[in-house]
Length: 151
Image (cartoon, rainbow, N blue to C red):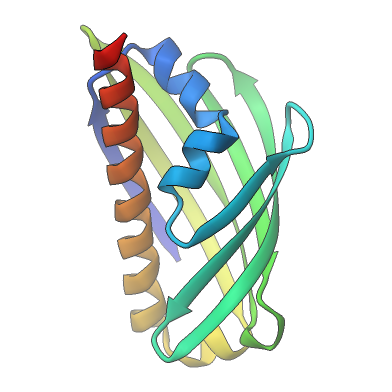
């Protein structure tokens, strides 16, 4: 499954870049997130509780950041396991484009799921993934815009 989108954020690109690498901001914005821990400049782990249709599970995941071009872009590769509920893994390319005093965040992601989650059907899984992406980027744009406006 592929997800592509963009968000306009009322903050300079450098501010958005720093927020994308801030575990506290990410924890606030990731739906169902219980914790985000930065292990190094390129690695993090997270615990997230998600419900996809009738399947609800706690996922423990790890992420790796690569292809750094600060403050322009990077690639996120991650995977998470929800026990018997299944697993998810994927990659996302994130690009930040300065547009006046605002930043356009563009993303292109590919995801794969397995286990009970995959048995729910691709339409439900894809719709849920799109909804989660919208929730994350909506909260992220709002949080970064608010913080930038306060400074």
